[in-house]
Image (tube, rainbow, N blue to C red):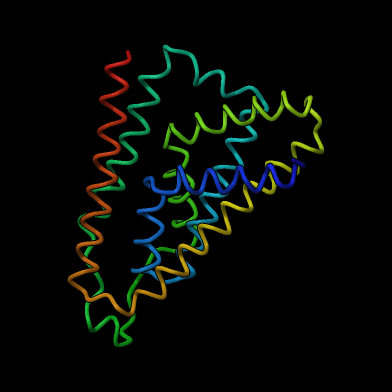
Length: 209
């Protein structure tokens, strides 16, 4: 297969196998509560974090994180970030009827959503492991040819971004069918999911230490 097709398949693999992690919870919850634009900005934050990870892999900085003595610290930091986001998500109240009727509601700016998407994704060690593996694999397969690698990872990242935007669009469409009670439960489920994932990362870090 050519580099373009390899990249698209790689992007779909990432979207399918890693698309149901913490970032997805935040993506759906943000789109439902804050609108399509906010969800898309968060998706761009996820895209930028993937781009940064690919860059780190090529620069060799990833070797620092792969050292056994750094695993526990990385697990604690990653888990704590997810737990904090989970608590905030769980305690956030769903918009009430008055808000839906047009009253103004203060919401965070685009930079907040951009950073949220960036750090939620980059805090997931499984995403790190994924990119380390594929960067090494494709670099060897294509004999470190820079142009081919740019096409592969460029198309892969764009594929992931497009699928995330489609998830936002789907969430925005079903928003009208959701009552305030259901939206509040979505907050709770998303919050619990983030917290549990964060606790899992910390516990696993201690067990492997």
